[in-house]
Amino acid sequence: MCKGKSISLDGKICSQSALKKSCTPIEKIYQKKHYSFNYFCTFAIINLKSYKDMALQITDASFDEVVLKSDKPVLVDFWATWCGPCRMLGPVIEEVAKEYEGKVVVGKVDVDSNQEFAAKYGVRNIPTVLVFKNGEVVGRQVGVAPKKTYTDALDSLL
Image 1 (cartoon, rainbow, N blue to C red):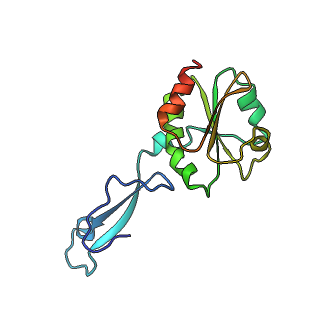
Image 2: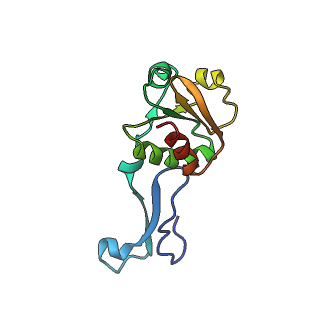
Image 3: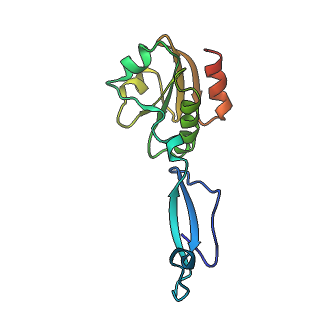
């Protein structure tokens, strides 16, 4: 929300989504100076193509086919919509998916809707990221970690 005479919050990314919050003087939008209010708040989607749906949405029904039968290494992020750290990790996972597109399968499992494989692999805390190769778990990261943690794990498998 805009407050007072603040012009913008450029560079601040909302932790819940890929939205950029900014405030623009209403005069610049309408090119008129007689409005009684000063600022019009807007939300602009940034870099949507970079972050939208690069990681596969994996379900209990698709887990075997997508993860266990893959001929490529697979990075799986177990997460939930209500989990703050999971939302912080989301853009990192999407960057990894984009960077390794075609070399690695990157997917996300919503543990609220898909509990079978979360339980099978002992996911008790989220976010938990598992790395699979030939259907076997070869790496595990519980909690948020820097992007380099995930890329190093994948690089060692390629």
